Length: 224
Figure 1: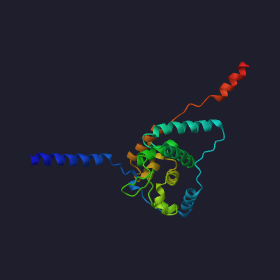
Figure 2: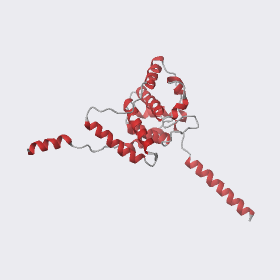
Figure 3: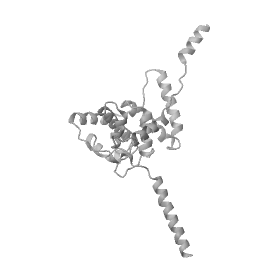
Figure 4: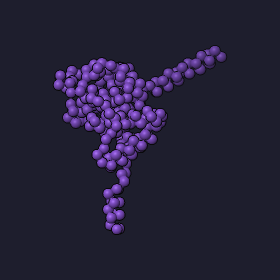
């Protein structure tokens, strides 16, 4: 009887350990390496980090505004399960749009990277110390920021760093996104991480159908 109970306890302990292992998030950014930056590059990146952040988008025509609003509504529905709080979800999406477009990146790419890196957990920390939504390594705050690594838990700060860093790697790799993602992860030359981010990007790509406002106006004019 005692051996049966002991066996059951061991089985339970093994099951719990296995569950913890399966639920653990992979430390994708753990191998990202600190690289020496020239003074010119360091100052340029620091200026981008320090620039005023205003995630309120401005549009020069109504079609772009409609596209943005459709994107925001669609991605909010997709993100609801991962970020249940509506205010936090909309803040995240607005900031993703602003920081991604500011850095010349696709919002879908940034959302895919966040999904792979942190699973949208703004307080995630990898075993190597990468922090926040885009799993930014703290040494970046010393190289191009004010040294406040705890600020990486703030959505706007983390996305600013992450987008600026990815843009830097993309420029360094002459537009090669595969290698830029490899450098962001510290696994340049290996396919697992870039493939994961690019697959996640496809989930977040959306092509909303815009209203055919000009055509409708022409049709109304023709009927008259």
